[in-house]
Length: 271
Image 1 (spheres, rainbow, N blue to C red):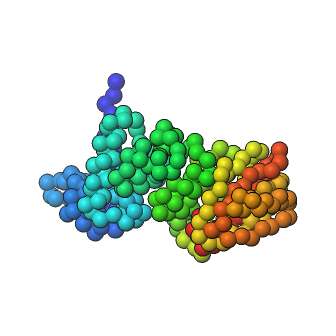
Image 2: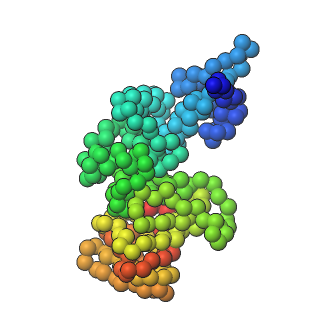
Image 3: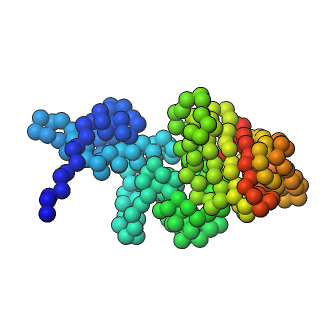
């Protein structure tokens, strides 16, 4: 049986590039005690794959949660303790489940505390964090609001992207809701969230939610039912459009036994 070959360690420039930060930022984090890479006799820093993963988590907590070094250190310690106690592997930081878990840990919340605040079971939240699946669309919106962010940002939509999205090349959200496919039609931080929703028969938001901004929906195929403020219902077919203020509670569903396809625009990008 052959011995396993250790992965080649990363130099500081390579580790920084993987985390999406400058080498000087990685060195600063080392000074702050957030990362402790190995060193050659010459003093050159060497980062393992685990070090790079930790750098990515630090960058995420700094960027998304706005934490200072002390808070980041506490969040990482809580994450390590919780992971060791559960005996389960955590989802990678660049997945939806990983982002949700890191945001929760950054706030110092236990699973049961977070679950109670958004009205779901702790087991459902644990499944979502580990697998990125198993909740309703309304619950996803509630979780984003609880974290003070948006569903779009949780999906990684603020990553840099070009102005043109070619047919068939749209990035697909890591959507935890069964029967709902969301394609990103405009990448990056822009003044509008532009998506193509593809709804399987029977799919629905499973409750109403609200946020800031205004929304425009155009039905390309199928039938779509939109309910505003719990009482005002609009049944829309192919070619129909609707415009409404996002602060109005809105719930929706595929209203037919066939696939429904929509263009859905939010402005500003508060969804």
